[in-house]
Length: 108
Image 1 (cartoon, helix red, strand yellow):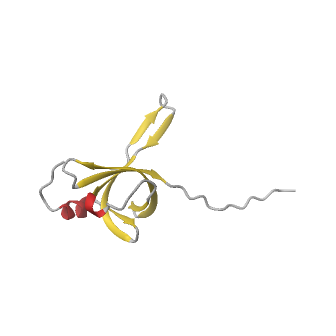
Image 2: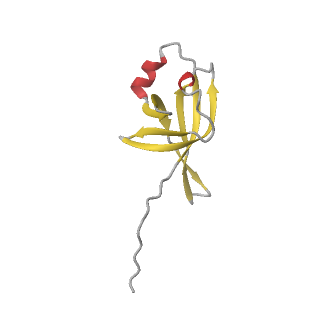
C-alpha cells in the first residue's frame, strides 16, 4: 500500500493505542480467525500494522500493550516486516496470557 498522505491522520482515525517502552503510538490490529484441523479448532491470527519509524526498536519477543475495545491487552512479537515502500510494517503477534493465582480448597 503506497500512501502519499500524512500517515498520522490515517492511524488517528483507524488505529488503536499501542504502548511499547513507555511510548504510545497508533496501530491497526487485525484479528481474523482461522479454522483448522477440519473444523475442530479455531485459531486467531494477530497482525498489527504500524508506521515503521515509530516501531524501529520492536524485536522478536518484545511485549506490546494494545488497547482493544477499551481493554489493555499484552501481545508478544513473533515477527516484523516492512511493506511496500517501507513506511508501514506488519508485526505478527501472539496474545500473552497471565494466569491469576487461584486458591483451591479440598473438603475433608
